[in-house]
Length: 520
Ligand code: KIV
Ligand code: ZN
Image (cartoon, rainbow, N blue to C red; front, side, top):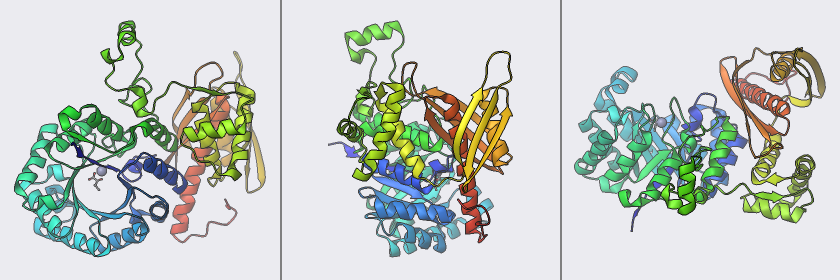
């Protein structure tokens, strides 16, 4: 029987640390539900002491999500650990994850301490955490640049103090697969109590080796891998969950290990993360990229027709990629719609069904052929509209053509008041963005903008993604519509709303009165 590797997803914590990837509580809840549906073993829901919003999101996830262990991160400091416990204690299976840097540069330059002092802090942190919670994980931050004998002592001492999982992070993505294999093997040979804990790895992708390093650790005996959906994370990101899970499954012969992840949820989860964060997945990304299972070259297509195995090592359906289904038409009824949505993993309460059906009919009137991807958009819109908004987009009109300056007229609403502006621009989207910027009266900078079609054909929905900077912060917005100008405008307004809501939450947590004319 092959070993079961514990999959620890940190998209909501380390993934969210990617600049511009932050999610509000509603978005985090949505992702946590999807991770549970995917049968992830451990969800790291956030870093409770880092902000009141993070605390709220971790508590909300801990209260609702059943199945996976819910972990919260904390530095090796008593206040951090207590705050973490306050947030995760409601979970069916709570975990405190505490960490401290153990490499020379962390010990000496960051903490101005000795190795012995840092080791004592790690032990004290684990002892405090175990007095609160049965399941404690300790991470030796920057382990892969830590002196090996010292790392061995830290691992042994924290296991002795009660850590059930000890994580060996490659915090700066510096390791190679050989070094990782040797380090984990060394720990298994030299830590006498190692059988009392699960050894975990957590690799960053600065040199593009995070997945290889994680797999090398598994070969050397690691029992838990920390990773993120789409490899989201700080700088070059974390090891990609979908690549690790599919590598273990596809190459069982090499690893003699597997996971209990429901791989058929991979594509849906990847799309959800992309939608919630505005981080578009590159087309040639392994497993979840748009081209990952596309066989364009004639010679490949010929081989595939003879026998799929000639060029295919995984089946697209194993990651949840089905032929784009022509599912429903304008005359489909509510029962048909509900059945299809349930098939796609959506549970809809009776009182929500009328509204979902209305959206479906409105889309079917314009589009005639409704694919699964269109249904995902309808469901995302329903969720997005339940999230608090500052500005509402009421109307967008644009006029463009050859030999004329594109013009736009935009009407938006805030606090019951409507505001209309016209503007010109270098193109129709630029004109719309200029009008919106005038209305919201903020110094906004568009850092990135893209549009892609979601389904096939001339009546495909266009999905716009935009990243916006304001006042040192960045947020992404995404929206889909048959009209790409409309989608672009809505995506821009979503990003602006995220920036304003985040700003308001920050000011509220600092005790500022933010209700003066800025009621949401
Ligand atoms: O990269 C890292 O070292 C981390 C730890 C907090 C686990 O994210
Ligand atoms: Zn990390």
